[in-house]
Length: 165
Image (cartoon, rainbow, N blue to C red; front, side):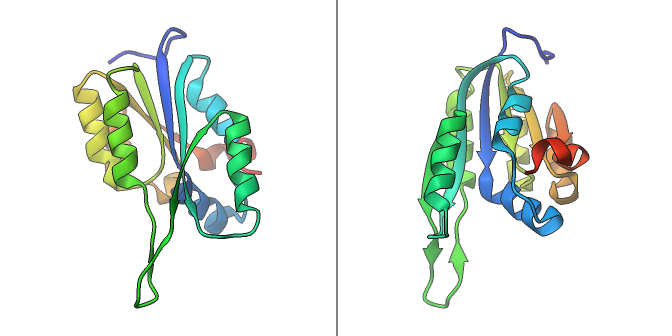
């Protein structure tokens, strides 16, 4: 595996719902997406930055999506699904995984910003394909198997003053 160097091409994929819920439940704060992107790239060549978001018809939602675009993220938006029993579902696991596998042929490193253990198999696959797999998430809510599957893990909680607004 390669270490970090300025010539690396990087894709940053952000599981916004996953990070949001931890930032809110543990810290009652929001993510600083500018700081997140800067740390993920670390002076390397940014190829793609994608934030996967859920439209839940919340207040200020559209301005949040616009702010992500202004920072440099491409946004992929999915509407929340509501079921007849009142339950709701919204996640981007399959979409993020497909994008990561597709991007793997075009980048040297993929940074996954999530704590979801479902992505551990994706990290293993990327590494097998020769792509560096880095994970950024909150240690308190990140699955151990994801940390173990990644080439590196950055605990956003250790630097909460940097990554939280």
